[in-house]
Image (cartoon, rainbow, N blue to C red; front, side, top):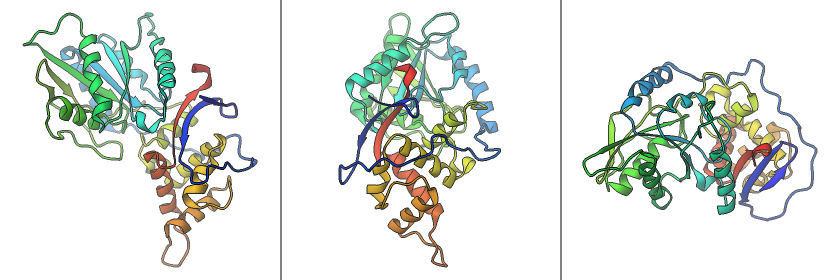
Length: 331
């Protein structure tokens, strides 16, 4: 871990740089100015309905898998899922391939989360597992902790029911498809996509293992109705858990620029898009990105909207670099 005291965060990263040379120090913003009346509220009706149905199904569930983004393991987990505390709960930190964590760093994060407790002093989670959806080797280890979390032995004729929970776009449906393909050797059965809100209803049981028989229930991503901390809300949006249009692509790209500059990762956008110098001016950066990708409007002006979308996409794919953002007080 390398500490960034300016943001009060620890950042784990593996930079993808063509030159390997870091730019000189440039005076950058110390705080991000959020747009007036900025809306990071996204709690459509299907989420409210879905959460009620999840509560109704809970009595038929043996284990709850709470899926979250490994790049922000301590930011944005839905505290309402603590209402599922009557069942064993496993935290699955997905997309770990984008976090760039070493084995020792993974252990530190896992140990810190395992110290979390509920108001009754019971552990919040029975286990914490790091996975990467789409990678069999990363997901194959998930069945063992599921079976371990169940009270009592699992007989041959017992059906194990697992409910998948999490905020939007953390890879819940992709994880189900990977598990189904890994253990049951069956093809994709849950719809997936790069934007949040693909799964909009509590699904029927999906069999992912033959012996013992393990069934999972896919559910819609459930956001907190309101994220009080605006920086946390923007981090969630940056990872794609909110629809970009809720915040605004160019405003979100500005927050990405602010974040990379704060963390000393100016080379990430400079090298990829051939931006001549580090800058805190989003218009300057987006114009250079638009120039690099050939994004122009009919009148010849730079298409900064397309540039912002490209900037966000490459960050989310890990093409710019891999990182894990952790509040410094947690590790």
